[in-house]
Image 1 (cartoon, rainbow, N blue to C red):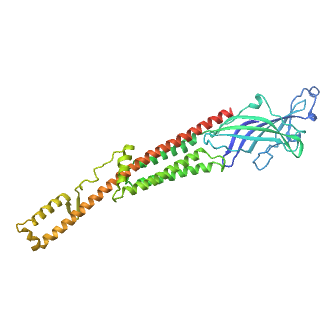
Image 2 (image 1 turned 180 degrees about the vertical axis):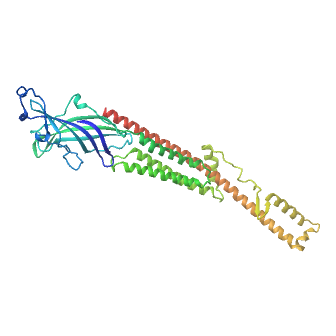
Image 3 (image 1 turned 60 degrees about the horizontal axis):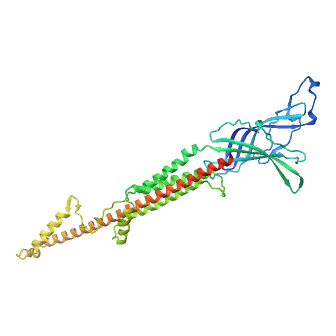
Length: 414
């Protein structure tokens, strides 16, 4: 059997279709003649339908009919009764797919031929040997490369019959060309995974962090669905590339949860427990090499301005005016009676005291928020380092496993 071209390799349904040129040779004692008696004629060609032909059948056929031979072909007859039949046939056969190392996989497709009506006592097929059996005229199709084809005769015995049955078994090996899948599937997945790690380099209170994480998650899910649609539903052998996509989806899910946590912490303004400050700002910040601002805790409220309409109040000026006015009203030279005679001054003092307390409270709240933002930065950096290590470990492990596994398969085939 000379392999001409691979017409289809249906990985999902685990079958393939090939175009072949088949040569069958047998001897028919009823088709002998003496060439000297017929003008030295030693080869004649007659229609194949006019002579006896062995009923060689492909057992793993997936086509609608088992009659795959064109009826208008010719056979070659020779004086000693040898019949040679050259016929082009398109075979469709099952092919168990091994997709563990997809897209760097090799597929071995086995085709079993035998006589459908005759047992081994009446018809014994033999495999062709030599250079004639190793002719290759394979037309490359860009997706699969032809590696080798081997044949052998297999003998089987069944309880029903004492005679053996012979099968002619062809094993064809194809190598998948992985360039397309690397360019349009693996590299985009790696870039998306790296992009999801950059989320932790954005400011903690940036709302776009969550949008970027969810977008990356949806993109990875789409890539995984593409793999799932291509692969057969085989529970015994899962592709390592699908496992890699699943690991990256888990990483992005962790980044989404971490982003939600970081954004929530960055907007917190409650009083921080001392152990939180010690753990994140004193210990983990040094571990992840992140410099944090420790001057917010216990410092004086920073002066800031409050704006009401077109009037701007500066906290420093307000404190100065309030202190001077309080000092004047609290002296013993009789001016303190102003607070009892003029109610406007007392009202002004109450307003200024209220505004001062509000500014101090606002400053304390902002200082607490700054501390929580520092904690969120530390958590961001910790998650970034952990997920980088996770992504590198998964990528190197699965990549090495695929490479070593594919090399082992190639050595076994050779």
